Length: 372
Ligand SMILES: Cc1ncc(COP(=O)(O)O)c(C=O)c1O
Image 1 (cartoon, helix red, strand yellow):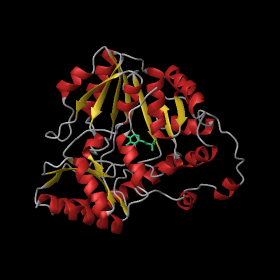
Image 2 (tube, helix red, strand yellow):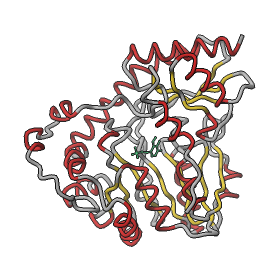
Image 3 (cartoon, protein in one colour):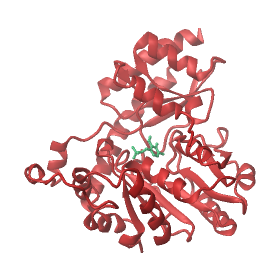
Image 4 (spheres, protein in one colour):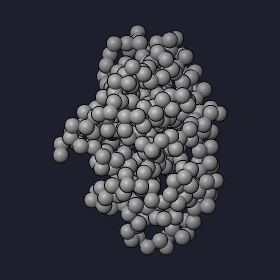
């Protein structure tokens, strides 16, 4: 099976540990094991954990705790994976066949198009509208989601726009998928990382075609634990488990143990609230920085997630802008082309204040000379 390169992930893994300022991230600065110990994680017990294989689809205890997050879900409806990315991948592997059609909200985290095409599926995009606060383009949506559409992928909250679908938009999407018999794959890894008082609703419960993926990487703030999950109908989850057996068998035992603490209800709220505090602190700093460009840099402020998607007033391709910032300022950002929207830049807002300010300053030096 041939697969196209995942442009954004490859760029990040090539440069993120080499540059001085990695502003290409998308979660908040991560928690440490010591901080997790403050949430009740048994660090001493961790030292005595036999390093054997874990339950390949997630320990029962972990799956019970995850199931408790999704009303009506049972442990058979949960598959624990190595990150949300493996969760998405397993769904594609188990459900897509050559000739299938996949609908995809764009801009987005561009994992699904590459995976779907490698499996012989055809990908149809429907855009979030830059001129309408990232409301889906409903004409494109209707064209993309038809009885031929096997799977629809969206992220809500969305990476990279930080937008959240309205209740009406969610209902419309879920109803259409129900009518057309399309799997609705809602990637909810940013749920809980809202910048204001609103809370993102889950698609879970909005029909029997709904599959939710999520994980610990964004709203929980612990991507290095590499735990994600699938919530879906039992037969689909069983199919994903079969794929899992062949790929990685299952997640690491250490990660499962950490995850059990993180997803426990009170701790989940603690992690979310830490994330939201960081975002609320950083957003005004980013806002002032954007405003400093006198309209040549513009954005719709993110309602969730630690990223700002900014439109710049120049014809230079986004990859060239990002390369210039990397080579001249040792600062990595994500060019819009890597998230499906040219003319934009995705900039990380989840770091410590001094890091954020210096990263933005460096980016600003190059943008100023680009605009002059
Ligand atoms: C929408 C979305 N899904 C999945 C992932 C990958 O998540 P994980 O680190 O849990 O594999 C990302 C990472 O940026 C993402 O933005």
